[in-house]
Length: 301
Image (cartoon, rainbow, N blue to C red; front, side):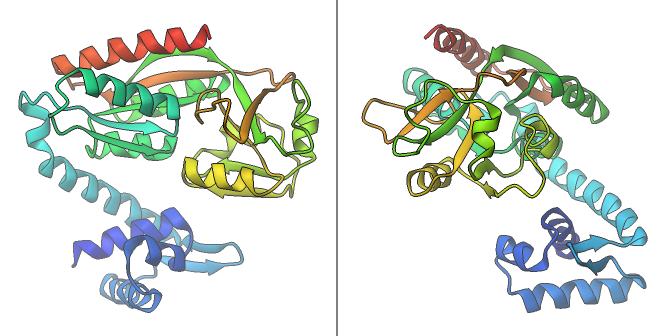
């Protein structure tokens, strides 16, 4: 049984679409479909059913995927054993989308052994958890709404991960173009935001954003996967985005602006995520001290 087929099936479940999974895997849709069909024939049962909403696992497929994910995780742990027992001074970090996070990382690296080959991945909260669970990265820094923090801490404990609070009470802000019809306002309400299409980062759980922002059913939503796409979407349309303050770097010359949200009764917390058994190396400890110091300074601006 080809282990690549496990990876393909896992990606199809994650995407809910064979076409999109094929794009992510750099395969043709027909080749991916053939691989899954061959796997199903070898197993003797179907893994997926087509539904009106896309591709969904069968009851047998659901159990298969749980085992496939466990096998994939164990293989990656085996491959990454050296990174957890050596004395390397590199930093291996998966971080939730934020210009503030990346800027602090680059500033620290410029002043602290810049020739070391560090790694930094900017992605979403769900992927942050997967990166640590599967030993792709040693550390993750993520943010979430305070009302959802306990849920994410519980999820971390289920897979023997530890969560450490780095900062709290960070406001969420509305991002919009300076040419937007609401750009002259000093602050926005959720009702103001709901009058316009909404662009959000993909890979955040809906409960973390859609419910908390009280987005109406069937609202015009666009999910994007990087900060550049958010920038371009806001610049060339009347979309509004809601992000952590500092997620997009704003300067006087920028054509995008932040506005406070005056009736959002929630704020954002920032956390460090790692395996419970992992001991930070000295340079990681130095980076976290630097990071927390500058988070504190940024919050006073």
